Length: 506
Image (cartoon, rainbow, N blue to C red; front, side, top):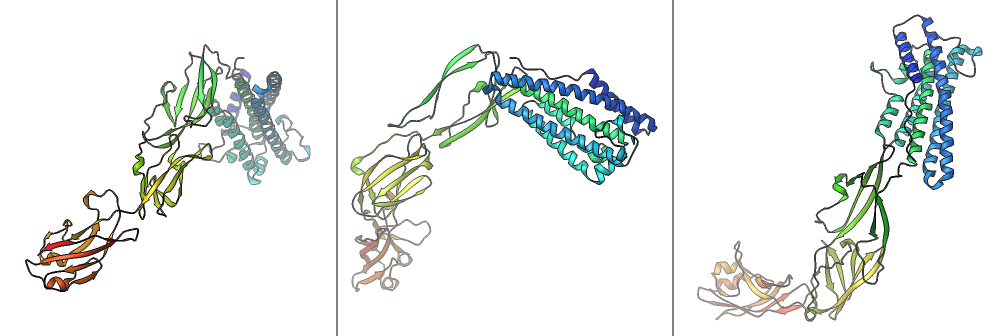
């Protein structure tokens, strides 16, 4: 099928519009009241235009129903929208018709007719009743709201056709006039009844014409996707970019039919991509989601838009190496593990520690054994919404190795020493520390809890803590040798350790 063309404005509609403008201008110039009878001619023409539009619309709805009967699956969506258009158009049309009747009844009273044709109005030149009903009684506010809702409805239906959107916004404009008047004030205030009724009839005519326009547009959408294709290719679309051993791999194999003479526009995350090729540097780890649109002009000139979403997973390049003889963890400290599962985001990876505990910080797993025998670490991952075991291993638990004892001078930047020469004053401000030194392979904090100070000619002094006994140092002179024996230290595992002795010559 080919798309239906938009209905152009007929010569009759152009004539009516011109007459409407001329008569409105004459009103603005305060022409005599006899001229207002010209609105009768305009109103009559508008009613004839409405009758023609209604006949055309009836034919359009019948064609639409026939298309549905032949191909329900293809036409159903658009026919449902067309039915909604008919209901909303009828509702607004009837609302305006009742609006006109109520104004005429105020003016003509018992002589009023049930239908509001200007030719049937007696008080054509009445300047008060339209303002009374529309402004004083605030019915004009409701009319404005109804028109705005109808306009928004038509604009939303024409989302892929900016020219139609602009047309509906113009036809049903309800903004302030150039002189700053509100829409309802400009329509009803100081206007003769015949002019107001004619303008309202013009709105009814616009409703029927717009109804025809939008129904034509919706009808054209039923074949907007019927493209001529000249190239068919096979495409394999996997359900996931990763598959794990033991899991099912699935992919949809389809035929892609394209028209190489029409090139769509591709957009990803708001940016246009050339020839539909989306390339981006994978600098961020984890699951990366993206979305976009494909835009293609249809046979009716309207732009078809099709959204899409997808994702991919980024992981670190990695190789797994394991020295099984040195699979150990230490008690009392956080043993840092980097654990990942290819194709699974970091946040979807967790572990279970049998014989210990863990916490996760900065993407790393910090594991603390709670027993001296082996512990087991199991790795679990969330795949397709389910927790699955991905592997694991056993690790031997060992006590922390003994650190070394050092004297730490109090001077800024001074390095710890294990013996040698020191001045009495430097010793007085120094303390004992215990650490693995510059060659440490394991990070663990130790503290000195006690030691013994010895020197020739003096009784030994037992010291608790890490500070040297100042009173004992005061007895020593240059050349004396200070022995620090039985140095005891305690680590994070709370096990006391004997760190031997340090000799210092003053």
